[in-house]
Image 1 (cartoon, rainbow, N blue to C red):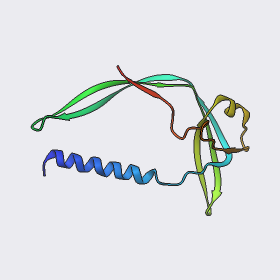
Image 2: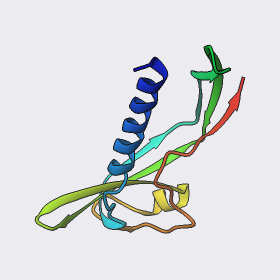
Image 3: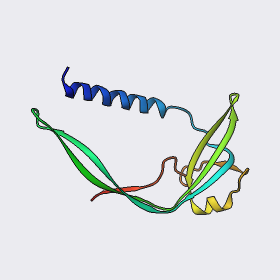
Length: 123
């Protein structure tokens, strides 16, 4: 089996595993058990980009700058189906400051994010 086919199979396997991991239901409301603030910062990551002309495969290393704004994170928990389920949400400064530990938090679509916010640019 060629290296390209093996690499393709590995990538498909990784994507399948990540897809199945993302299928778990996430709670959208619960009791706040932790709050966290992360300051804005920038990071540079080198990302390998693989290209092929049909005969040869090339790997180029491309630097990307990731810009992370101030992040306000709320961690919640809920006892459901005989187990504790947890989730975390990135929210606004106002929501973060208005809620305390042990308060009830409910995800609001236009206010809260499930993934860490950032922007990315080629260097």
